[in-house]
Length: 150
Image (cartoon, rainbow, N blue to C red):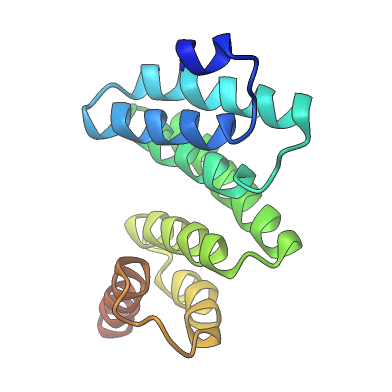
Protein backbone atom coordinates (compact mmCIF):
# COMPACT_ATOMS: atom_id res chain seq x y z
CA UNK A 1 0.00 0.00 0.00
CA UNK A 2 2.82 2.40 0.80
CA UNK A 3 4.41 1.89 -2.61
CA UNK A 4 1.07 2.29 -4.32
CA UNK A 5 0.37 5.52 -2.42
CA UNK A 6 3.85 6.81 -3.27
CA UNK A 7 2.86 6.83 -6.94
CA UNK A 8 0.07 9.27 -6.15
CA UNK A 9 -2.53 6.76 -7.29
CA UNK A 10 -5.80 6.41 -5.40
CA UNK A 11 -7.90 4.28 -7.75
CA UNK A 12 -9.21 1.17 -5.98
CA UNK A 13 -7.44 2.06 -2.72
CA UNK A 14 -10.59 1.27 -0.75
CA UNK A 15 -10.72 -2.17 -2.36
CA UNK A 16 -7.06 -2.86 -1.58
CA UNK A 17 -7.58 -1.74 2.01
CA UNK A 18 -10.67 -3.95 2.22
CA UNK A 19 -8.67 -6.98 1.09
CA UNK A 20 -6.01 -6.15 3.65
CA UNK A 21 -8.66 -5.77 6.36
CA UNK A 22 -10.11 -9.16 5.45
CA UNK A 23 -6.66 -10.76 5.58
CA UNK A 24 -6.03 -9.28 9.01
CA UNK A 25 -9.38 -10.66 10.14
CA UNK A 26 -8.58 -14.12 8.81
CA UNK A 27 -5.30 -13.90 10.70
CA UNK A 28 -7.16 -13.06 13.91
CA UNK A 29 -6.11 -9.41 14.12
CA UNK A 30 -9.46 -7.62 14.12
CA UNK A 31 -7.95 -4.36 15.41
CA UNK A 32 -5.55 -4.08 12.46
CA UNK A 33 -8.41 -4.96 10.14
CA UNK A 34 -10.58 -2.24 11.64
CA UNK A 35 -7.78 0.29 11.12
CA UNK A 36 -7.73 -0.65 7.42
CA UNK A 37 -11.52 -0.31 7.26
CA UNK A 38 -11.34 3.14 8.85
CA UNK A 39 -8.74 4.18 6.31
CA UNK A 40 -10.83 2.77 3.46
CA UNK A 41 -13.86 4.75 4.62
CA UNK A 42 -11.76 7.93 4.64
CA UNK A 43 -10.62 7.17 1.08
CA UNK A 44 -14.22 6.60 -0.01
CA UNK A 45 -15.30 9.88 1.57
CA UNK A 46 -12.37 11.81 0.10
CA UNK A 47 -12.46 10.39 -3.43
CA UNK A 48 -16.14 9.55 -3.85
CA UNK A 49 -15.07 6.09 -5.00
CA UNK A 50 -17.96 4.26 -3.41
CA UNK A 51 -18.32 1.08 -5.42
CA UNK A 52 -16.71 -0.94 -2.62
CA UNK A 53 -18.45 0.92 0.21
CA UNK A 54 -21.00 -1.84 0.88
CA UNK A 55 -18.28 -4.45 1.21
CA UNK A 56 -16.15 -2.20 3.44
CA UNK A 57 -19.09 -1.71 5.82
CA UNK A 58 -19.78 -5.45 5.79
CA UNK A 59 -16.15 -6.21 6.59
CA UNK A 60 -16.29 -3.72 9.44
CA UNK A 61 -19.23 -5.63 10.89
CA UNK A 62 -17.47 -8.98 10.57
CA UNK A 63 -14.35 -7.59 12.25
CA UNK A 64 -16.42 -6.08 15.07
CA UNK A 65 -18.00 -9.48 15.69
CA UNK A 66 -14.53 -10.86 16.38
CA UNK A 67 -14.42 -8.62 19.45
CA UNK A 68 -16.17 -9.30 22.72
CA UNK A 69 -19.17 -7.47 24.10
CA UNK A 70 -22.71 -6.55 23.29
CA UNK A 71 -21.62 -3.10 22.07
CA UNK A 72 -19.56 -4.76 19.34
CA UNK A 73 -22.57 -6.86 18.29
CA UNK A 74 -24.80 -3.79 18.11
CA UNK A 75 -22.17 -1.93 16.11
CA UNK A 76 -21.78 -4.91 13.78
CA UNK A 77 -25.52 -5.01 13.14
CA UNK A 78 -25.44 -1.30 12.29
CA UNK A 79 -22.57 -1.94 9.86
CA UNK A 80 -24.45 -4.79 8.18
CA UNK A 81 -27.58 -2.63 7.86
CA UNK A 82 -25.52 0.23 6.41
CA UNK A 83 -23.84 -2.19 4.00
CA UNK A 84 -27.19 -3.56 2.90
CA UNK A 85 -28.60 -0.07 2.36
CA UNK A 86 -25.60 1.00 0.29
CA UNK A 87 -25.77 -2.15 -1.82
CA UNK A 88 -29.49 -1.70 -2.42
CA UNK A 89 -29.04 1.97 -3.31
CA UNK A 90 -26.34 1.03 -5.82
CA UNK A 91 -28.29 -1.93 -7.21
CA UNK A 92 -25.27 -4.10 -6.35
CA UNK A 93 -26.98 -7.47 -5.94
CA UNK A 94 -23.83 -9.46 -5.14
CA UNK A 95 -22.94 -7.02 -2.35
CA UNK A 96 -26.56 -7.11 -1.20
CA UNK A 97 -26.34 -10.90 -0.98
CA UNK A 98 -23.12 -10.78 1.06
CA UNK A 99 -24.50 -8.10 3.37
CA UNK A 100 -27.81 -9.89 3.77
CA UNK A 101 -26.05 -13.16 4.55
CA UNK A 102 -23.89 -11.51 7.21
CA UNK A 103 -26.90 -9.83 8.82
CA UNK A 104 -29.01 -13.01 8.63
CA UNK A 105 -26.17 -14.99 10.21
CA UNK A 106 -26.02 -12.50 13.08
CA UNK A 107 -29.78 -12.59 13.57
CA UNK A 108 -29.72 -16.38 13.56
CA UNK A 109 -27.15 -16.31 16.38
CA UNK A 110 -29.51 -14.00 18.27
CA UNK A 111 -32.44 -16.38 17.78
CA UNK A 112 -34.16 -14.07 15.29
CA UNK A 113 -34.73 -16.91 12.85
CA UNK A 114 -37.85 -15.65 11.08
CA UNK A 115 -36.39 -12.19 10.54
CA UNK A 116 -33.21 -13.70 9.17
CA UNK A 117 -35.11 -15.89 6.72
CA UNK A 118 -37.42 -13.05 5.61
CA UNK A 119 -34.40 -10.85 4.94
CA UNK A 120 -32.26 -13.31 3.02
CA UNK A 121 -34.82 -15.31 1.00
CA UNK A 122 -35.89 -12.53 -1.39
CA UNK A 123 -32.30 -11.47 -1.98
CA UNK A 124 -31.32 -15.04 -2.80
CA UNK A 125 -34.42 -15.58 -4.95
CA UNK A 126 -33.47 -12.62 -7.17
CA UNK A 127 -30.58 -14.62 -8.63
CA UNK A 128 -31.19 -16.80 -11.67
CA UNK A 129 -27.65 -18.03 -12.26
CA UNK A 130 -24.28 -18.34 -10.57
CA UNK A 131 -25.46 -20.88 -8.03
CA UNK A 132 -22.04 -22.51 -8.03
CA UNK A 133 -20.48 -19.37 -6.50
CA UNK A 134 -19.44 -19.45 -2.87
CA UNK A 135 -21.68 -16.53 -1.87
CA UNK A 136 -24.83 -18.13 -3.26
CA UNK A 137 -23.89 -21.52 -1.81
CA UNK A 138 -23.41 -19.99 1.65
CA UNK A 139 -26.71 -18.11 1.41
CA UNK A 140 -28.54 -21.28 0.32
CA UNK A 141 -27.00 -23.27 3.16
CA UNK A 142 -28.01 -20.60 5.69
CA UNK A 143 -31.55 -20.45 4.29
CA UNK A 144 -31.85 -24.24 4.52
CA UNK A 145 -30.64 -24.18 8.12
CA UNK A 146 -33.02 -21.37 9.00
CA UNK A 147 -35.94 -23.20 7.38
CA UNK A 148 -35.16 -26.30 9.45
CA UNK A 149 -34.94 -24.28 12.67
CA UNK A 150 -38.07 -22.14 12.25
